[in-house]
Image (cartoon, rainbow, N blue to C red; front, top):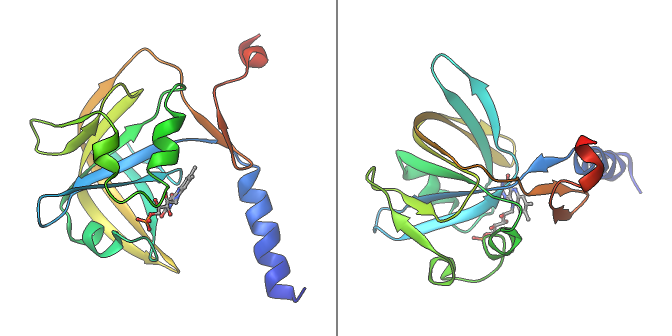
Length: 165
Ligand SMILES: Cc1cc2nc3c(=O)[nH]c(=O)nc-3n(C[C@H](O)[C@H](O)[C@H](O)COP(=O)(O)O)c2cc1C
């Protein structure tokens, strides 16, 4: 293995060891069709104003469409929604015919029964290597009293029972 391949492999191992929640980012494209993908690069950025970020791989099918939208939804998945994590990272073309969702008052696609929904308008886009980081200003927040879905070492699942004990 050459030095660069070794570094990439160590980087993937380090990042894979870092647990995250799981979200599905959704938006309508220019033709009014819903689009979305599973995202774990989501993070909080600022309180004043309320900012969040996520990064999109330039190879994602809907990449060009996501760069054109002025608003999007971050759907934070609940512990019983691993099927949505799989659906929105699969090769299924019409992902929205296989899940429960609606158009919100802010005219954004919102998935049903999630842990939280953050509707955002695009604040900035930052070109970052093979990804683009999208920063969003949060314009609407909905929270539900549910447990999160976690992602760690390529495994998805709920918080283990012993976590809070
Ligand atoms: C747990 C998990 C987290 C992911 N996080 C991201 C992410 O933050 N950014 C991204 O571009 N792709 C991420 N992906 C991959 C995309 O969901 C996947 O490449 C995309 O849905 C493929 O879509 P396409 O067929 O439309 O290209 C993640 C996948 C999984 C399973």
